[in-house]
Image (cartoon, rainbow, N blue to C red; front, side):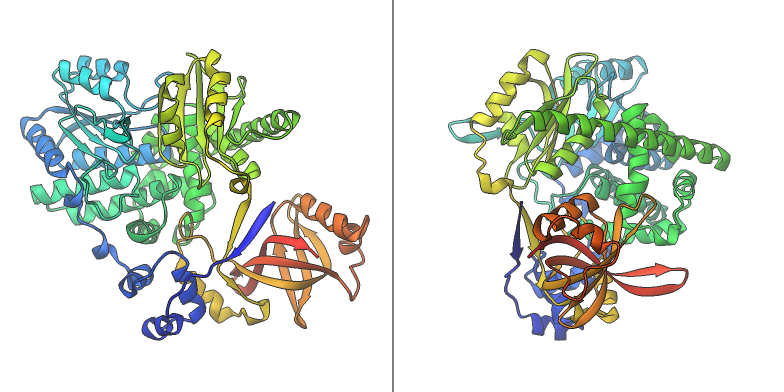
Length: 590
């Protein structure tokens, strides 16, 4: 079930069009991204790295730089501790490479997903002590590691935390009290009192900012070149950690994508080559759905150290071999994920109406796939989902949420059921006892605050616009909105009264369609890359049995099958040719 909603945000669209040399259509789309001020329109369209914020605006930055500088001067052994996802891997790479170039004695540790779990643990602290480490710098983790960091202090190991996750808190008399870890310095844009203008940055960007600040403090001569070299990794982590592509994030990703064409990192070059990507044409889609998953697969099915080793490769043959292994791991992960989703759907459908907050226990599924499966289930049922699996020590799980449900806050209210948890509004990770699964399910649903309308997928239409008004000039202009993704989706248009006349199945599995249609007297070719079986089911439900077969065989005749659609406009480039492309995103037959 869907609810189509046309954006009705107001602005002087004609004035913006004249001021910035754009069409009123593009002006309306930009306003729909919650941009209200002319200077922000300029930044959205033409922002450069000089428009990014100073690292010194991050609370804790001065203390962090002072601590690291002191340990650098003493020649202290430093250990960077990251995480096993793309953000954690890229964060670790950024910090380790930068500290090494600045002369530090530095190495890296990344927790093993199954053996260690998320973030710092006592074993990692004890290992650092045995190895003579004097300073730990965390990245993409650490904000919730109070006891582990306290243990490090007891062992005379100093700690600098760089993170971007929600800060743990307690509530007393309606007042929230944040609980920061007892580190020498804490950088997290979500901590109270942090005045950073855009707190929605990922862990790798926090690390990137620390490198910038440290380099400025040291007056490091190679800082400009170093920041250029590290930018693609900050961009990839931003996309893969599903940060909103607005404000500073948009600039970092757009500029980072440009650097892929000249990136000298042998590991990244090899990963692009085995994935069949042209470095000059890498997009945000490729980061999120091609390159990123290959790095993620190591942390899911093996050890994320392999991904870090790829990025640190100094030999092309070694890099190519490692990249092939990562791609094979990711292919295996895809098959395992598909089976896990099918098992989860079977369990849910057998129970009847799903709970408002879904808790699905898949004991035999590899624990590293819980997050991906939760994401797929959230898309299918449009409800908050926790997927739990049986780990080596109790139950582990991941959650994915919808806009109207703050997952981390909900978990904080039932924290007694977790042995460990962390996350933010839209996603979380957890550990718990198996016997607490049912009590947790009941507690999450007892006071979830969700209403039936929250489970209806809202389709936000930017502009109702007949396809006959769409041309190549507009399609080229829309490319200026890239990179698109979370917070800056591809523009969505809508048209009523489209007559579907004929269809042709396409794709290796014949599961997509090229459709010939007529709207307002104009013939158009429309593409559909969604669930073709569901498309045919809805067609036959409205126009009778056999209508789908007729559409893809003889055609529907002059009368056609009437439908309303939302669509995206783009340019299909193939072997030097360009053609306008309309892609159906949503539909219903009338």
